[in-house]
Image: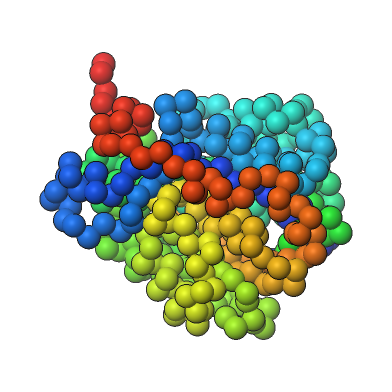
Length: 351
């Protein structure tokens, strides 16, 4: 199996998260759409405000990452943003972010798309760019204001949020990359055609052969390539479309519930799509200790999974409090009703 590891040692030198403060309780969705039943997959989800989108979320996360890294934005060789809810169909979110953080004009800027693993695709590319020596630092972001058709099961979970990672040389890193790999097949479990406002999905097939086949295969292949088992990791984080899938995947791989608990955010903020596993990883780094190994697995419908192993360094202690913690954003809440949610997300088309 092809283990991916850059020629030069690379790691995360700064990271940052952002989650909008608004929360839509699952009970509000059930009240409006009772045919969905009472078994909500999460308790609530984060909702972007009327002045927020994937670009503003990415900017806030990037500023937090820069604060932790202490990096001059002009040293960034690339700004890459993964999302499935870019605010423009034709105009790069990455250029907006790069301009806002003062990284322009000499850099690479591009948007990434692979459903919920667009953010980790950007992360892998940033690792490769820095690891090849082509740039001293690169910024990878996963951010979404997730979309869902009113009344669809996804409306319970389609949340908003994002996380940003600055990749740089190993001697400046808070977490070193030990290895990465991906597992990709063509699996039509989730899609949105051009001109369609909301995505469609294949119902129960999003679990198997979608999520579980790819998540478990990527995780097992990486762990095998590195000679590790679940017991060798302090913590693990998985893509979180709901609260059941990551728990089940973790159990099948031999992880204990307490190993994934710190990064399991879905019940409080929903599925942030491209930001899902990246937000979970930021929550783990907020509580990690030097020497901890962390397993990270993303999943993107379509379908594929990216797997990473990180080893935390002693620099985590001095940098984690240079910006707001992920938990600070998760705990900062303002509950809204369905009508406010519909207005904020422009579900009512007036023209």
